[in-house]
Image (cartoon, rainbow, N blue to C red; front, side, top):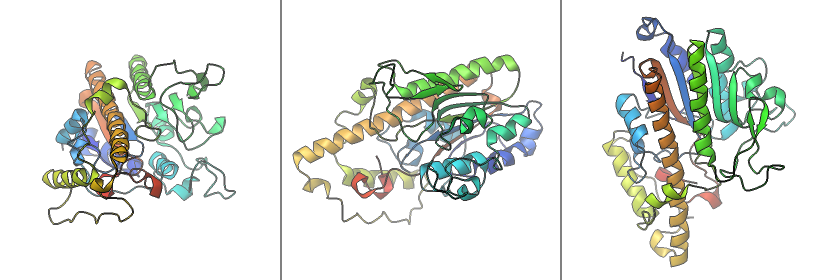
Length: 352
């Protein structure tokens, strides 16, 4: 078994995968316990990254992880955000963990909207094994302060507690548009700063500080991208200007064919039937085509910037001389947004 393992996957139950890896002979033979980095993105469509067919979106760092590691072709999640995160963090069914729906309390233990105390988080378990536990990004499994990451096993946390956030601060310091927390204290995003970038910055800062402890680390890097609202950096957006003139009918076929070439879809697998509720691209008006092109350009830019963050993470691990002893897992909490009014590119390439 290769000791340099990276897993770009879509899944829940990663707690079991991590435990399985820690128990393998390859890792057991190493003197140092392996570090663990769990990267979770939000509302990513199946074929929205290069390893799964998206040649139109630049994801060189995810391409590298796929080439050096393992791609899962068949894995499952809980279909929506908070329940998937509950299972991911506890290794339990979402109802057992207390988050059968979103982060609102419906008056039943299975739907209380936060992780119950009986369901230990990965952070709580790994702390008992001597790990430093770090998180940067989106929480969404408990709103009250006693349910926040620092109270559920994480030594350090930066990010937001709820289910979605703007990517830019457009309010004022007294009433932030982007309510953020850093180790239980309010944190204010400076105007012009991009939240995806700040999630990466804080994760890397935690890793720098952690090196003073001489302990292995668990980093949960939970990006909110590419979840709505669609907001990107101008420099990223410039790369994709005009790239989607071909429209969603052509793009979905291209990604389907790419996925077959990459081996993530069997050659005999037929492309999904076009959804009758979505017009063929050539039946849209000029203004409609411009509108949907722009949305896809921004969406692609958001994914691109996540990949840049992963590239910075890989560089940081190498600089800290931790790259040869770190397990990296990449997953999405669910497929792309699928409500009827939000289905913009179909089936093989759902995007929000």
